[in-house]
Image (tube, rainbow, N blue to C red):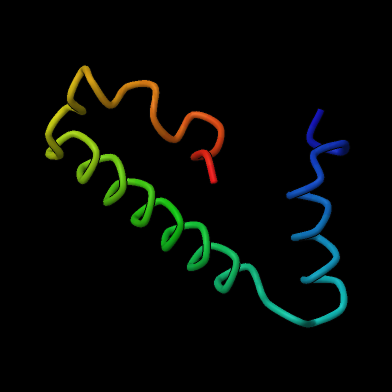
Length: 63
């Protein structure tokens, strides 16, 4: 299944063309993992939305 994964294929092309090495890809992955962990922590620490606002911003606000 890895041969069809577009992210892994793109990584392989970047390495093949000398744009980035394996260490660079690993650094990017670590950075993304840290950013996701920060976003999850922010969401968990944020207050729950008020019941009255649950339907707001689902689509768009009326003009």
